[in-house]
Image (tube, rainbow, N blue to C red; front, side):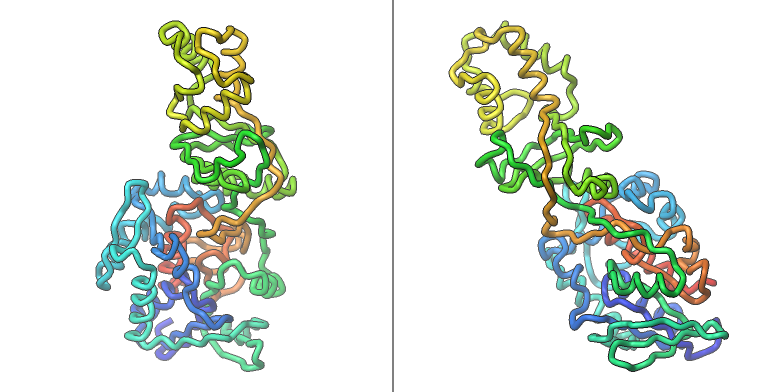
Length: 408
């Protein structure tokens, strides 16, 4: 790989594409590095991420903890994250004049709170390093020559020659089909990071209401359980607890056409028995208080009013009026409220797909294809995805960094 003027073509002008191209151009200044993007726009996910602020990474420097945020790719990313993790991401951007900050929930953004800052950094670095950028250049076909170099056939009819291809095309059905025709296995894509559509009188007109900590599980699959903030929307439920569940259950939920039952524990992770005992204690010590006016277990007032009035059929009951049977019913509703999900909606800040190039066909020490020499992968073209919070971008930076090293 030491011959000068080797041609490196990066397919995809997104996060992973720019990171791998910049890494490559810095390490190999004598190589010709080009980015080929099928659309007219560059770095579109970077632009819209985090509501336009760009959630660059997550403040988690323990690799064993970091990989737990990846429903697909957890084991494979351990090695790569040892080489390039969020600490390295902070250093990388700081070295290029971009300061990052961590918020209380661990999400990290540029201090400017503007995704344009990240985009400008990438574009500035690409210009400084002499990286050629071609937009409106979709790929139709890849052909590897006997000497392992590549012919890249574009939709325009033009043909590019490359010694090395770095495939960073994101979740592209078109490119996945091309890779499949080449000989790679593509794990069928299904949606990840989506919200739940639920029509239920318990949620009616409560849109915008947030529960600080709830536990949600898929009714038939106890392994699919998550906890965290939950947001009631006009179409059902969203928030980190729901989005995490949709990511971990992406394949199982797609298999049932996104129609299933969930159980919600509105009392964080408290058990039925603990909630029942607390209600009994409250009845004994606050007998004259109206139930509907005294929310418990950190449940927001409007939700508490709705749950208790619907269940007890009498909004004016005092705690003293509660029978043991009613306390048991209320405790059951608070810790395992059942809701029927009738479909999904795309989470506005994330467009994540589970699926892509089979991870067994990639060497994660180099990100090179195990089937085709001089073909590397980075980012969401792989069957890797994460929960929301900056983890998907971190996977893009890490795999892009390793692919850009061009280790054979």
